[in-house]
Each structure stands twice: as structure tokens, then as C-alpha cells.
Length: 353
Image (cartoon, rainbow, N blue to C red):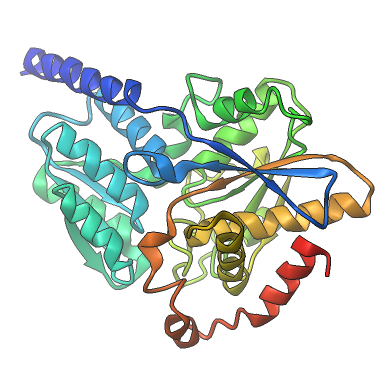
């Protein structure tokens, strides 16, 4: 049995690596902020991955990590706890390897993500309380003799933060010929905390002066944990910005690699993607708005100190997944999200008027 699984492991890794070799790197888009002409803002567009989000990188790493540890086996189910985008990407890799896949998700997850998981052959298992998804995924793994891939525990260790084409290495390589090649700030929102850990560790390992700012939405435990050190915080409510923010502190969240955190109201995140749509001509997901709002705050502060330099953040996924939520004014009203004040603030941050 062990030998037959080793053969399957070799074949599975070869399939994943071949898929990686077919995928070009994601684009780095430069935006000009009219109010801050001496500060360059870049968006790394992770929505162009085959499964449409930043989580494609994580899913690839988690599958390779699980296979090489001997945890993911031929014909055995793979189970994940996810608010959507990670599960979409993992369903893609599970289908590639002909493995059953079950996504345990909050019942409020957008229908577009549920449909995408189903498109890749995954099954969606919805739970009412977002805080219960990991426990339910663990139960299903035991019940089905499958593997709980557990992004919230393994995200920060499944990725090689030193190099090997991780997102940080890609950013610094793409910035090499820019006017300010070493960013003053990397700005990232946290879901598992795996990407922020990779960015912070990579910047330190390569001895740069780049600082990491993590932006956090309403109802997330990460921001209060960062300030208080209390890892037992439980907000009792899931995030409305899908893919980021957690009601409890997850094992993959590494506060000591973070230089600063900014708490971003959900209404500000939604106002920011509406502004970004005007500048890019296309829609982006809510977590991109969280990233953009924090980046513009930092740019404004840099301008006030007469600093020049660059800021890099991410487009995490496409807004086409959120047409019925973040781009729907009725949904915003139902969620009591008034974006008008933040639209005015963002106009001031962007245009200086």
C-alpha cells in the first residue's frame, strides 16, 4: 500500500508542477494617485490565476504540503474549512488529482463561489456559524477517512517564504526596474495570515527596509489580538468581507512579522472597490478594497511627512463573484453599510479634494 501511494504521490506532484509551469506570473499594475504624485502605488493582480484569486497559490502549496507529508492519499476525500476562494482553488486541484472534495463554508458565502466549487466537482457543506467551520471539517474528515487540509493552521508553513516563486519574491522581482524598487510598505489583508507571514518573513530574510501593514475588517480578531496579545479573543461574528478576517485568532497568523495594522470598516472597503472600478474599468473583490483603503491611508501619511517611495498591495480576486453583495446597494442597506461618508473620504485621499 505504501509503495502504491508513493507512485500516486509522484504522479500527483508531477500534475501540479506541470499546471504551475503552464501558468504565467500575475501582473503588477501601477496606479497614479493624483493627490500623491511622488508616491507610486502598485496592485499585484492575483485575480488572473486559473481559479481567479490569490488563494490559487495557497491551494497549490497546501496540496503539495499534504501530499509530501503523506496526508493526502489516492481516492481519499480532501476537506477544507473556507469562506469560499480557497475552496474554489482547492476544488480545482482536487479535480486535477481525481480526489473527492468537500468545502465546509458559512451559509452566507456568495452563491457565485458555491457555484464555482460545484463547477470543479466539489461539494459544499454549509454551516450557520462561521466559527464552526473548522470543527465541522475535522468531523467530516474523520467520518469519511479523508484529510482536513486546514488552511488556518498550515498556510504559513506550507509556503516557502525564502523564495521558490512565492508572492513576495515575485513582487520584488517585478519591482526591480521601477523608480522606487524597494517598497516602503507591503499592504495585505489577512484570512489565514499565510500571505502576510510570507511577505513579512521574505522582506526580513532579504534584509530590506520594507515594512508590512496588515489591514483588517470589522468583526475580526486579528486587529485586537495584535494590539493586546490576547490570543483568546473571539468576536462571535464572521467577517462580511469574504476571505479575510476571522472571529478567532488562527495559528497561521504571525503578528511578530507585522509592523503595523489598520482596522478598516467594511463600508470603507466597499467604497474603495467602487472607486477602484472607476480607475481600472473593472470590478474587484471586497478584500481588495480593504487593501486599497489601507494603502491610501499610508500614502497620505507619507505625503504629510514629505516622503517619496512605493507601496505594493494586492487585487485578491475579481468582483464578479460579489455582484449580489458588495456591488448591490440593496444588500449594503440590508447590512446597514453606509458607504457615502467613505466615498467622500476616499475622494479626498485619491484626488486631494
